[in-house]
Length: 324
Image (cartoon, rainbow, N blue to C red; front, side):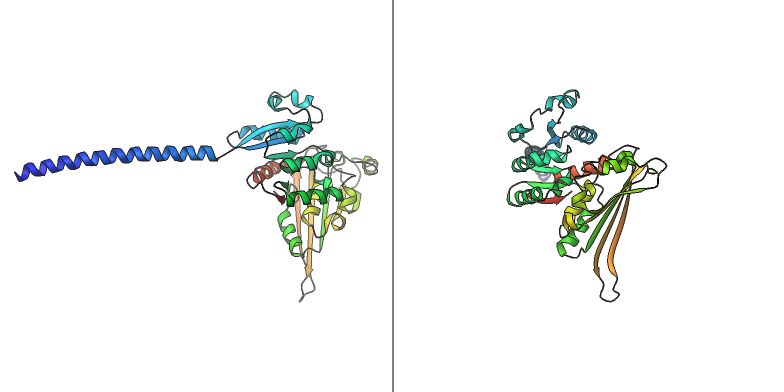
């Protein structure tokens, strides 16, 4: 009797254990499905539009299309629309009229076109969505800078400035925030054929021959240089924006045309306050060597740097003026 009872109890226990295991498995499956559904519904793609379809714009479009789990390329616009229409990879998202952007559902517009595009449409773009600026020389226009800073601080969208070749942009910005940045000088050295300049620098650079010694094209405040070299001195403009306590009028620029170079060289020198004990100022000097083909306006490292800035900005879209 005892043995039979024990056997009966064991059978009941086994049955109950099997039922409990089945229920637990089912519950686990339901929970996993619910979690997966929740992740799927809450993780949305970042919708990106590109203004400008030169080499950098083409590179960024290609990289975005590689990341379709996280990004959606909403549109590509170029001043000469045929350049977009002739590329099968982006023809479906070609935007012919820039004035149609306010009708587009987009989280971030990446400008890699020309400063004039920002001057003409920057306010419209920023009122609509977040804006990543690839032509920061535009901010040398004081009225434009003030207008965009006001919009970015008072609205729901932000301006994102790629640090690019300006090494340690955030560190310089921190010094400016504390008021401890006393001086900033940015020197750029390139092969003569890597410059796209306006008069009178264009004519001065044309006189630099292959056998020539390096020639100083400009030395002085960044603000006056930006309209003379809008495609070449974005690094300097970035520096002036980071060093906001000095700005475009006090940050110093040195532009050098050097026919011996096969790289774009940027030197950044930041000076802080003097130490009370030694009377020596705090200083930091950084040199960036970016290999580039003769004639290339954009150095090789700039492409990936810009992509990293885009990826970084997409994670923290918010109002304000930010470096990325």
